[in-house]
Length: 202
Image 1 (cartoon, rainbow, N blue to C red):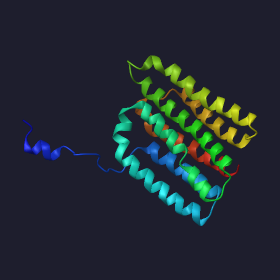
Image 2 (image 1 turned 135 degrees about the horizontal axis):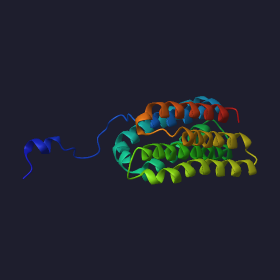
Image 3 (image 1 turned 45 degrees about the vertical axis):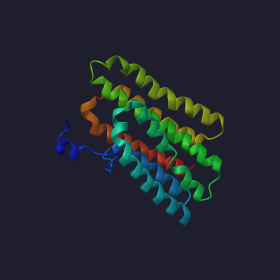
């Protein structure tokens, strides 16, 4: 029989806890700032506040589960890539531009996620054989996106995707492990800032 103390400690449902994941805040901040700066207006500002609040609330509910399931981590990065779309639309951006911005961010964030997986796998005896495939995927995915965006006539978005490929390539050469997460995070934050600057100028 479960003791009264253990029943008191067990949560009855999802608990609110501000996510501490560095990557979440980097991605959300970069997307929101890029969208708001590219299409500044009162509507986009108010929408940005709502997006940040809703994103933080949702992340506080699911971040523990996401942390345990790699597929959810990738899905979460793609959701964050689309966080700027409502802000841009509120700023009266053409919906096509919002779509291309989302595609560029999705390519970059997917590359980030796969690169981090490769870094953690490099420090794991069980997952070490996966490093090559993860690194290749982290480079290939944004490269394919860049080619598609170039063919569609969106060279600025293609450049943004190429920055994701460049970051993944640098990790492949650098070969950092799980113990180097701080410099990895700082590198990804710098790349995200560059991507934001590129998309603002598109």
